[in-house]
Image 1 (spheres, rainbow, N blue to C red):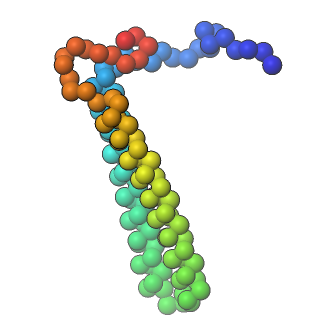
Image 2: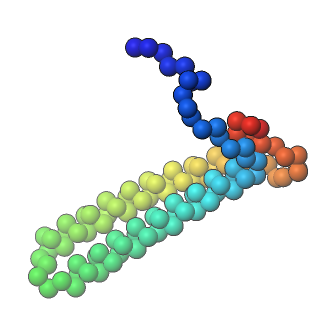
Image 3: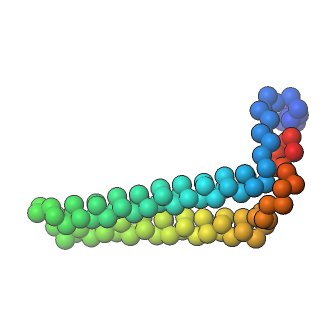
Length: 109
């Protein structure tokens, strides 16, 4: 297998971003992911309400819908833990109050 020289790849250069902007971008991405998880939980709630209002739905099918919702809630809870860890990482390692020194993150910084 031939070794790949990174300089031969045509990868775009990372934009120069201040540390403050990088932290803001990370926090914004966490907020967007939290919003998406909220929508997922809302959809699961609507699914359960719809299932419970269906007359032809028997107990076995209702339990299947409940299991599906439970699995989704567990998956969302696991993703919440990941987001919490990201937030703690930012808080403990990346966020330093601005001192207006123009600290940059990226290939040009």
